[in-house]
Length: 526
Image 1 (cartoon, one colour):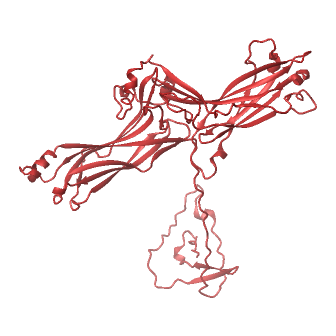
Image 2: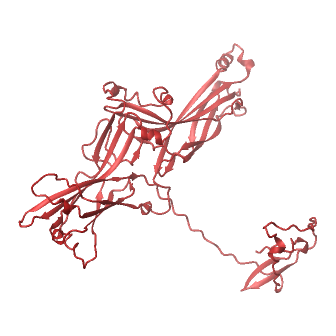
Image 3: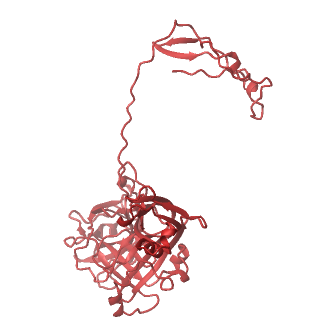
């Protein structure tokens, strides 16, 4: 007799939406399939076992390995569910089906915290964020005890199998997080933009003989518009830049020019040896007594990283390691120059003209995998990832913008050059696939049944007053005269037919005894 178990979730993944919140939860449902088979030599003998316990454990973990950090791991959650009630073992028998495999499906439904980070693979050692389901079944063979006590081959076999037996199963669960639930319309239509106001008060060039006066640059207003969320599958980033001056003298407006702008989109991957205090205060991670190495992870990549760990010493308890790379193609410089007149502020001081913004818009190309030599051995390829903040790994994105200005120096033909740079946060997200549009329902008109009798005008019966049916407080009035008991009638119910606009409506006339507080029961129409 052989027993095995398998975990079969109803879905390939657990999909979460929006930001991780501790008050939200998701469902992970499925079956634990128990299979029982009988060896060929014992096909004529049914097998019976008592299932003492069937335990299901859902665990999440985060692992990283990096120089200076070495190997670090954190248990994100651990949820245990016993599927067999305590003290109530379940009898399983393949009697009548000894020649085939018997299977039982044990249904489970686990509540998964909604704040968990998505599954991800990071590094060359198989580290990252992963989730696992573990099932453990404990059972006792209770087949025929008389044959078990004999000295025959089958008796010895049954005696060896009569003790408590344990079998396990393991399943990897993928957790995905999307910015919002799927819809039937284009997901890009719902992504809004963020507006940032920038004032160039600190130029990049701190020293130099030919510099633009600070009081001139401080009068420049800059509005930058970037998407609130960028789909990781997009190939471009829409970027809008608006500029104008305010309260700047006319002579300065005519001398101040814009050279263009330069933009770069970067990704920062940062590993740390343990969760930050801010993360621990925000999310309910298990306590230190449940963290490795006190309680080791059931499935760990530590042995894969064991060789590298021997030759890398951890610098401190709170050590970090990071890398930064550009998401622009190697053929793209990110520099955009104005080909027309660069003196865009010349009319700003004209009081007769309304104040207007000079708008520049561009679609910045981005790529999924960086083609620069930014690959490092510990982190693997430089891949565009969604922005997220995990306990041991953080992925952030920024757009770095540099705006150069020119200024005609009075009395000379020379130009002063100044520029200022700033960085704005970007959020890359996973967008749920578009749902298929529902098929339009088709209504088929059917002709009405012909009238059953001659047309007779139906007299309208006035409805009773509200006070006859309900009390002033809204309670229903009770008729002191109860309705008579129902008795089947052998008389045929008379019917009348009313014609209106060449359409027939069939109404049933009710017996007067079916009135309630003077209100007749509404007639059925067909």
